Every structure is written in structure tokens, then in C-alpha cells.
Image (cartoon, rainbow, N blue to C red; front, side, top):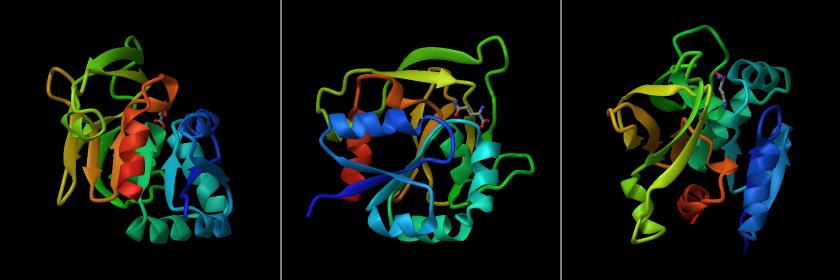
Length: 194
Ligand code: GLN
């Protein structure tokens, strides 16, 4: 049976993720209600504003259903979505707390709030053995300050700071793979769904 990927559609760049999924010929579905989680095999939490996404998730009764979903199904958070997945964002805001990572919001300050850079991401060699550099777009991005427990780094900036992490079937990226034509990260997530 073909898989359906949900995209949390409370706020932010959910439409862009759905476009990539449709380019890949994958069923994508907007998720706004707890019962819609039963219809999807994995979930992408998009970039946007993590405080807003968190407050809306509380208002829509999604916090517990999302935590339960993340216990056994793949979930990938991009940018604000990565913050929302984390255990600690160093400030008071609703977090799912399912990924053992500490993040620092808006870590790149005002002047370089947005930038693009090429990353080498070893894990993507399972998608393309030649593994060319991955062009990553950062928009008021968080840093992954630390990984704990079974979480591990997937990608770092040239200076060694962490910008992608994985913990089993959970993924977090500081950058926005839905804003480029390179769909390797989406395919990597699909590979976790199997
Ligand atoms: N700065 C946003 C936050 O802290 C994240 C930005 C993004 O998702 N592009 O929630």
C-alpha cells in the first residue's frame, strides 16, 4: 500500500513541503486535527514560528496525540518544527519534547538571520552514493546546541555547529529542504518510513 505523509498545517511553510511530496509522487496530507494523524504514516512539522505552532497545537488538542504519534511513527521537524520537537529551547513555550536535543532559537542573530551554505551530510549517501554537497537555506534558524541520549548529529556547519540531528525515526533540521529543488532530505525521511 502506498504511504501517506502528513504535514502539520497550523502555520508556516507547510504548502512547500506538500509541493515536494507531490513532485516525488507521494500522497501528502495536511494535518490540523488529532484524528487526521491516524491517516498518515509519517509527519513533517514545517518551519514558521515555533511559539505560534506550539500555541495552536495546544489550542487544537494536538499535544498528546502528536507525542503519541512520535513514539512509533517517523516525524521530521524543519526549523521551527525542529524547535517544537526538542526537549529544551531555553525559553517558556509549548514543546513536544520528544527529541533529546537542546536548541537555540534565532541563533544566527539579526545580521545573518538568513543565509545559504553547502553542507556535507554523510547520511544522504544512502540516497545518492556520490553524495554531492547539500545546499541548505537557513531563515532565522535555530542551532542544535546539543544532542543527548540516543540523538546524534547528521550535519554540521564548517565550524562544527550542529544543524541536523536524528534520533531513531525522528529528524530535526535547522534549515529548509522544502525551499530548494534538492529532494534528498525528503527521500531520506521517506526511507525512514519504509
Ligand atoms: N525563528 C523561528 C522560531 O524561532 C524559526 C524560523 C523558521 O522556521 N524559519 O520559531
